[in-house]
Image (tube, rainbow, N blue to C red; front, side, top):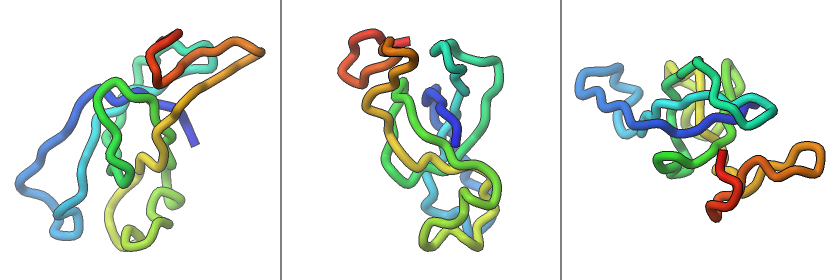
Amino acid sequence: MQIARVRGTVVSTHKARSLTGVKLLLLQFIDAEGQLLPKYEVAGDTVGAGIDEWVLVSRGGAARIDDGYNNRPLDAMVIGIIDTVTVDNRQLYSKKGENRG
């Protein structure tokens, strides 16, 4: 899994039929210091994440293990919304807004 920040949404009216009803988010990955990396990815969202939230991202075949997603062409899925991230006894992120990176 990786940590990413939700930067936006992706809307596609013409797509594979199996993706109908799947919410797509534009994610920017975050390093261990809480810094945004230059890498972006589009991921399906099963948890209802919103803009600027930090999320857990599952990638590759593991992204499709959730019920109902095993036959969909998805390389990445948002599988959790992060409440806090702490590294070396220092809080990098809190969903409540304190120490937001």
